[in-house]
Length: 586
Image 1 (cartoon, one colour):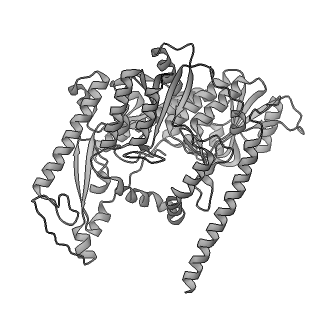
Image 2: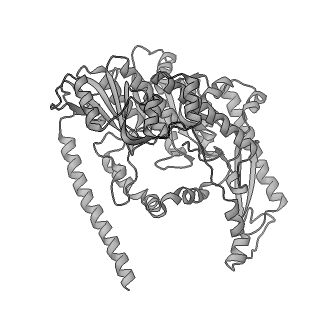
Image 3: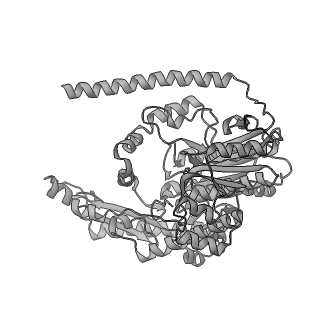
């Protein structure tokens, strides 16, 4: 009884905490909402971009408070790439903003997103304004972004990770053997290795080949950009990177990766000097949320719209938040298609793929929209497998050099749990059926040969459909598509070379091309779909949708990725157009 009482006390405590936090948060937002939306930017202002601990996603709400961190199981805060780009552009065009102070040594973002953000910062620098970067620790991805600054400083006791990219895969073959679970795989394509973690205890040679290929491409691209920004010879920097010659903070200074080993007060004094202030003076600062209240939409009175439809996350059927849900996305596509003021559509894709059926449903809706107005696909960090499938109908496909794309293949996965049930748990089953295949794909026994043949035929039909969709969209023969398919993953550079991508560029480039094709290049405004939800709806979703995952992260800590991947098996239903594995580049 004492245990139950303690559990009840904890639950009551969490509820009270959440309710009190809710009212406090509501009051703060009410006050913020009632304030003047147009903020006056003072002279000699510096935009502070403090992205430490944040995960960059495509877009977030414009609220002052990050609702993702609300509650007892708050997750890592997020910030939108589009929000950041708007802030940098607004700062660039405002004469009172003299520079940017970059505090982003520990952020979480994909290489393609960092490249888009980096380009915006470079455009800011090109106006003659300054960017100063400082932090105590820089991860490799964060340093890639920060290296664009005029000057980069590191804490005297800090450090930089600069040793190239890696991508580690978790394999579950041994676990399944111990549990006596038999995975049965159906796939097409020698590179379709999404199922390897369940069958092998290490990478296949095909998977190692493709992973090494696109990782080297991404790493070489990052080195070239850093070398250019820091004025270091590419060949020299490649050796520094590959041999991890920056092992102590003084190495970073010796090899030219930073301009000094300084404390923050010294960096802030440098900023004051650049602003023409005395050491005892304070300089004015502004953050992303506040400066974006001054952002003015281009041609906001124009009746011509370019619709940017955000497709971010795994592809699933139905309606859902935080993923690409087919029913929800089709509604947004149809809104844009049926709006006479929308002259062109840009599909912004950031997805590893997912359900083959859901991908087909979205493909159909985009194909119908394309009949009415130009359709451009803009690939973000990841547009692979199902993410490529839904991009295929576009008139033009644009990717960043370090986008991960391709993975044109399909697989299906089934598990025989008879050994686990019978030998480990003492559970047996029996069945009565009216037809030979009435218990088709039962998980309590081995599959029969006819069941295997039926499932494999379905997978092969799905692959043929995928190849046909790509061939139709890209104006290629099926034979040509097959040469770059097989489930192989490509970098954006490679995809441009093999015809899967038309151009290398940003979302803004995609929007410009869409406006040009719609013949409204001189008069248009950009609208985003889906519309952002009110803060109250976002709050309720954060309380309901992510509590379990946040609890699991807190409970399992470093083991969470393994638990999360096993939990993800529940989504592996039906045929899947999905990337070979969850690609995490470190």
